[in-house]
Length: 331
Image (cartoon, rainbow, N blue to C red; front, side, top):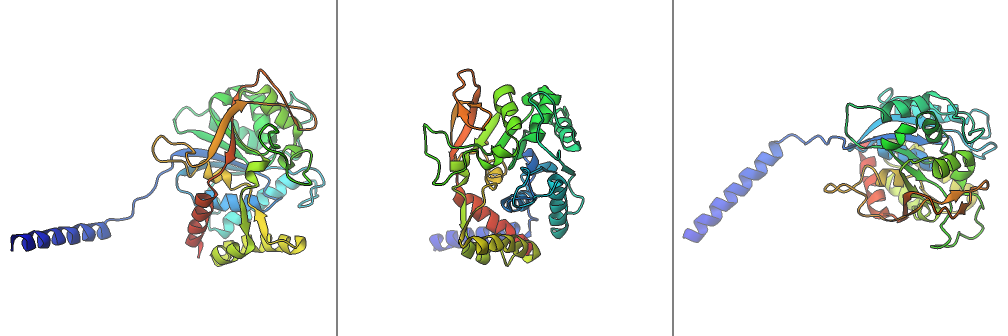
């Protein structure tokens, strides 16, 4: 009898606790880090997926969103106004997500650096410097770049002290030949490097900016299929259909069924860091000397190079499952 009574008491306590949990209002997640998003949103649509994912991630405090320029003659936008067009794409997407005016949006410079000492002035550069030099917060600041490096290179040239205040996370750069060979039919100069080689030279060769790099062999791991995008994203309201339509249009032209969402690691390595001893604990990187970037955008040995993080393995499972789960909010 005593045993039955104890079981009944335990059951009642469990039910009471469950009822309290059901009545408790949901906990509002608060940002742990600051991010400035800088991407060529008028080019490859993978950047739009990254932007939506960041906008839906409550652990980041988005301080600015920058639309950067493409390489001249780029097939996605061959106009002379690629940065301005990128800003328009950001604003249209935020309007679609009912976030119009929620975050400051800037257009970057219209072209790359003219030389290795002169910054390209823009409101975007001023925004980076202003945020980096704040003294009223101790939250880490990441400048996450999924395209060229014109804005962050210009910001450092204009105010070198920002190197002590932020981490640059960049999707770009070729494979490191001591680790892996390039893919078949590879472009000699990696896509994001080619947008502004001088800016890459400033960042790697001249600056002391802390760098987390996701090179080509690593961002190519972020393959998704059209079938899974149709199943898990296309049904997520106007935004989901918009994103998948862009990918499907390209894949129909190319006769393929997979696409590289190569800018999504910008979310994985910031918003999805571990809770304790916060870091990118589910992805693998090595610390290695920063290479010297030559005039072709290729690596040369730099025995005086500072240590940078170079990622070689990404937790694509968590990255994509988190994207798909958060997209459900848009239904």
